[in-house]
Amino acid sequence: MGVRTPVKAKKKRRAAGRRRPLADLALILLLCAANALWFGALGSAGVIKGDDIGYVLAGRAINSFAGLFAYDGYKYRPVVALLEFLETRLCGSSYGAYFAVNLCFQCVVTALLYRLALRVSRRRSIAFFTGALFVVCPFAYYNVTQVFGMMEAMCVFFLLFIVEFFLRFFKRGRLGWFLLALVFALLIVFTHERFLALWPVLLIGVALCDPLSRGKKLFCAALSVVPFALNVIVKRMLGVTMLMGTAYTPISLSVSSVLGFLLQSLMAVLGVNRGPSFHSGYTYDQYTPLEQSFAWIMFAIAALALIACVARLLLRKNRQKRAYELKCVLLGVLTIGATLLSACVTLYVESRWLLAPYMCVLLLLAFCLRRVNFLHLSEAAALALTVLSCAINVHYRQELGQLYFIQGMEKARAAYDAMIGRYGEALADREVCFLTEDEDLVWALGTPGHSIFDVYMTRPLSWRYVSAEDGVDPSDTVRVFKVSENYDVIELEKVSGYRQIYDLNAWKEKHVVVPDTPAETPTGEGAFFLNGNLTVVSGYRDRVDGLSVPANALIALSASLPYEGSDGAHITVYFTVEGRMVSVCSLDIDPEEGLWDQYFPVGEALEDASLTIGVSSPSIDKESDWVVFSDFRILVKDGE
Image (tube, rainbow, N blue to C red):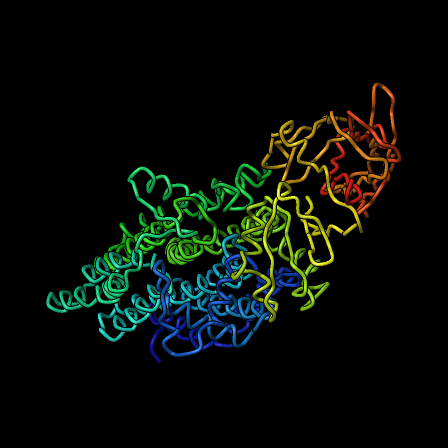
């Protein structure tokens, strides 16, 4: 019996590792369970809204094979059309069904990422932590919670196969693997055209592939252009716009804007999110000091892993092995750069476009950590990255309300419950008006002919957006709805025989400050308009002069307390005429219930009167109870 050499022992351990599929299956199932726990609760109360409306309506409209290859002059994505067709037949109008499909596909992508990370690291621990980092990252919420997110998830799915097959080709030089990589490259560019940026990476990879002869390199280089050139040629023939960003916005690139975007995006991918909160949600500036330190530690671990890997490879004695692995690192860096560059379709750091480069960063980290292993240092680094990322993103998950599409979901859900949920198809028997000046709500609900009503109703509905200046009042044939500050949707009830002579717009010229976030609003007394609603901070009163009011007039009032922690508020409404006060109402708002559709008689005819609204806190320790007046009107009998 011969003596076992270290090389033979090492090969035997590797072979044994490859023969343990049950261990891989167990870890993959654990990652799938983590996905279910991390995302599961987010799909319980959603509706189809915003971009999802177009996705569902487009899928329903496809009724022939030719419909899969239709285009709109701006985008040509036949793979997305196929997804729309299949999903709408499977899920119908059920948001929960789309969410379940997205969540299952998230698990599939996580499993593929685990398998590829295992290939490049040859360590299950590193592969598992790579999958865990993918689960808790802040870039996957869009893919899972939005119906339209399936497009981005499919791109990541195809990208994993491109990386897998190209690595096999790069190591052995077999053309079959290269052709498979090109097949998935063709699929990815016809799913989203921004992945045209991958072509230079494939071309450089062909040039660096040592097992290929010069003739085969030229052949593969020529072949590599086919998927990307085909996409460009087809779009040119169809007259489809090439450089079109989010919301059909044409983009023009400059060196400074692209470099700035790349730097900011790279920082976000590595944990230091300095992007605008509008698109990136919870940002670095909103982290606690401890979370900020976690982000920089993650950044440092990733950077040190890459530097240590390159340094160790440079010291390697085996030149052939050294050259091969250094080229792999270079291709990994180039792929990250290409996927970041492709996200320039927006030129601002929008988190949904960063999932692909983040996945590439994870794979490069798995590759580097394996090659700097010393006393299990690589596993310790991978574990540290996972724990720190989870610590930051648990807080991120709690702040999901800041994300644009999550806010849109809340508004759309409120509108659905108050309108379609309450009336169903009977809503089509009335004209519907939605009183709003909130552009975000318009995005969430859509526009006539392309709206939430077209998704959920089979009967045609006559509806439109109106402003307070339009003077539309509820009647037997018209229903008027409005969204409150805390996203509740209320119906303005008809008061029989009355018409409106005054509403909140009288305050708009006086209070024109519109703060972006609660943090920028006054903490003492004040009043301002936010999302079309008059918001008053307690300890404040103001008045409007020069009103003439008949004796039988009514004050219509709806108000609420939008923020948690308030112990209530006291409202007073009264008129004054030549120093004499005419009381209308004096009442308290309950923090839980608010006041909806309350009517108070004025009681006497008033000429040249001043109307005063006052808000105060019921307790001394509350300095800034906010009261949102979503409805305040003066109604008078018809004919007066």
